[in-house]
Length: 81
Image (cartoon, rainbow, N blue to C red; front, side, top):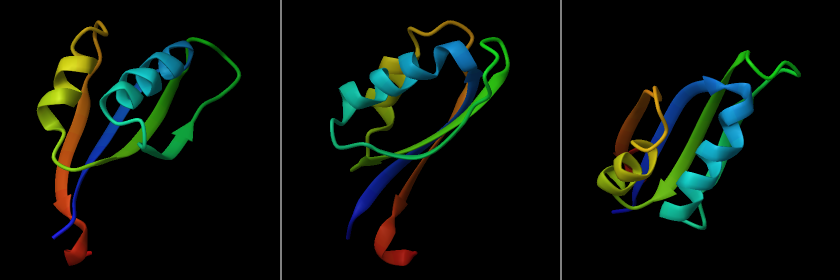
């Protein structure tokens, strides 16, 4: 059984790097699966990241310090995919 944590969020374009850095603090081997951003700093950007194991609590702790950030956290057994 291989478990991964998937995190998806929409954040202002100028905060994307802050979110990615916070998630890399949880798992230095995190896989950035998607970043959709424009050139304008205040336009929303979509971020999707995959982390090793069940990292729900660690993700919540890291992202709770970013004001107004809402995210979807999903834990999946990748052998079932």
